[in-house]
Image (cartoon, rainbow, N blue to C red; front, side, top):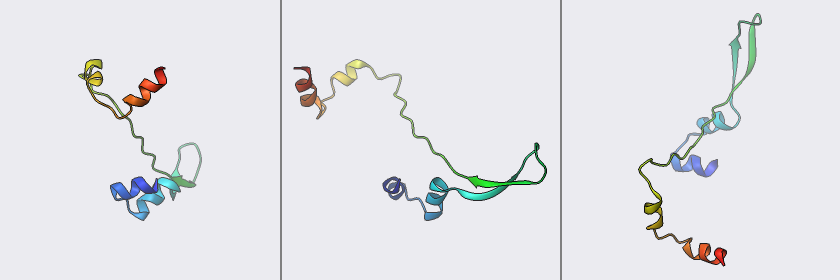
Length: 74
């Protein structure tokens, strides 16, 4: 988390929100009065490949892992 926060420039307050959360209180319809707790921000990172990519594009790409793949096939 610390490495990512440095790359994208998160403040210490934002890091605290991600890791520990911040204290808060919420009023619910099921109970009378306030309910105390914490709010924590959760960020999800997903990779979604382009629909236009094909196996042909991948096969024509020279990867540094090609030698390892060849060794693993033996």
